[in-house]
Amino acid sequence: MLNVQKAALFAISALGGLSNAKDIYVSPTGTGTGTSTSPYGSIQSAVNAAAAGDTIFLKAGTYKPTTNIQFKTNGTRTSPITVRSYQTEKVIIDGENLPGTPYGLDESLPNKERGIFHIQYANYWKFYNLELINGPYGIYARDASHNYYELITTHDNYETGFQIEGASSNNTVLYLDSYRNRDPRKNGESADGFACKSGSGEGNVLRNARLWDNVDDGLDLFMFGSPVTIEEVYSFQNGFNRWGFSNFNGDGNGFKLGITGNPPANHIVRNSIAYSNAKKGFIDNGNPGSLTVERNTAWNNGDVGFNFRSSSSSLKSNIAAVNVGSAQVTLVSTVKASGNSWQSGTWSNSSFVSVDPSTLQKARLSNGRVPSSEFLIPKSGEALGATTKADV
Image 1 (cartoon, rainbow, N blue to C red):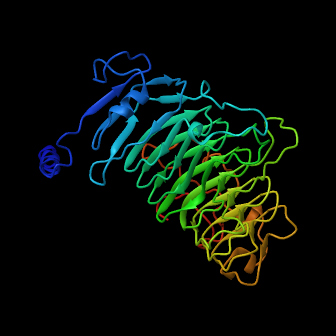
Image 2 (image 1 turned 90 degrees about the horizontal axis):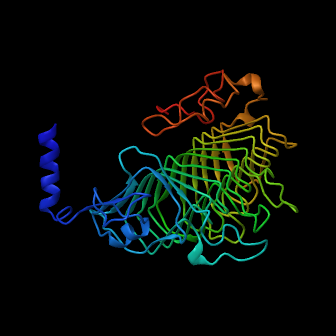
Image 3 (image 1 turned 135 degrees about the vertical axis):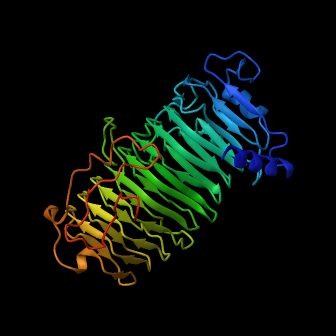
């Protein structure tokens, strides 16, 4: 196996993919020049020094920048730039000392100050195993494409935990946990777990993510005019005023899938769960597109499970049960619905193998995935609704 790996690396190097690649090291206590024995003390210094093919290793500890970290350069398709924790060490980047944490009620947050990581006009980057807290957004990526994010945690930020915006395409976000994000500037109006907003670009994907206890929505695709693929995403307990905001404005939907005025955006939502959110489970929110919504579950939300009021979407093999709204679903006549729970009788808690979400909320497995469980699996064995089981 070792000889095979060496041969592969040699082949890539011969093509120029790794010929000049270097490793750059950063430590919270560093004072050096970026080597393994003399690491930088500043993540920004490492980012500024990085070129296509380089890897930035962050040593364990808590980083406390006083200005946000700006990503402006590009890797390439064959030689991306990588930022990751060193080995499996725990890395926390704490944005509490940044401007805008927070500004006052109704004050604006300048674009350049958004995000602990501000990724703009920066393409072909990869990010692994990082925790971003207490920032004016955790990750804010604008007009940035072909980037990859894996095992990112964003929590307790003063705006959305992870946001993609503008002309952004072919970004993949895998194994995201984003929770307890809030926005004192807006009394809960806009801080979501994950958002892909106000822009367009094909090929953006969010997969195997958990979004919970955020002040507004779990997921929001406000004014994004291109299809986003959402798979194995679990959005729960969003939209509650845990921070005592006056004039509270949190919406509290699990999945908000557009807004009136969008170009039709044909988002894809599969094998995802919205549960115990303050309002609706899944809502097209005025998106006039044709969304594909398959094998999802809305359970125990504070309003209807599925509200598709403006689209010509296809809803297939979904479950809506134990939601508080007067009806489990609200669908306009242009929605094509087939094989869903509300078309096959009444569902209750007794229809499921388990209504205990605790396993879903445990630590991720060594492969990055959420643990498998029997949460909201139909006792009947029907191929309906979402499952956390890896083989589905």
